[in-house]
Image (cartoon, rainbow, N blue to C red; front, side, top):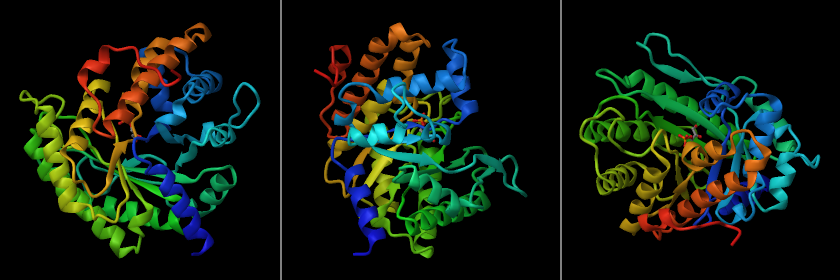
Length: 346
Ligand code: 13P
């Protein structure tokens, strides 16, 4: 095996460990600022550093988290002991990753649809991120469900760009997280979400094949098949689990080692219950786990409120969500656990 293949294999083996997931802590500065505003915390370099240090120094979090996706700012920051964050994670046996896309821009000749940018200069940026310790990367494509969207043009173009990104990452020995997110926004039914998600994933895997991406060394990070936020008929946990697994079985080859969902605006409890129900279906060809941002962080951020004195309680809240999702990734969660005192350190 070449050095590159060895690196990719070592990273993907750790990321697909049964019962472990990924913490997405890679919110861009405008996004984390919006989240901080909701809990009345000012967003500065230092508050963002302190918040992320609080998460990543949670006792025992390496029992349920295999990797953390960082934003470039955090990759370059040090913790309060002067240790760079990637080094701090490595010491705990947690892999550092990096968000490498540069966000969304309008896709010309569509009505309000987007394409993700950031391919120019990506190889050079990856060299730099790798030197700083990043082992894996993330790129997010976004699809909106509307009367006429997503268009074929948006589906094809986003697939092409995701595949180009994934191919570049693998050439550099970096495992790509391929994230096609069908947004939960809107009043669409779960059936409509299913009808959209299937061709989206099909196009992504077609493009990955054309670009010779080695499926053995990717993480797929999809949205779940779910009713829109404003849909009057909410699909049940069982319906979400069945529809999501049905679409994944039809579109995702068994060579993909692990699928780590985004939470996409579900409540923390819903995201855990859905993941658990999918794992309880059994006979799945891939590991099914999580790569949540909001569903892991919401309770913790609300508890923290930017105050050092709240750090232990905020870590406890994060620890509980990490543990419950770890159980859900093995199909061993139950709703009754929400009421129990659960913490990773115990
Ligand atoms: P959410 O889990 O909050 O959807 O975030 C996941 C993510 O990384 C979005 O790119």
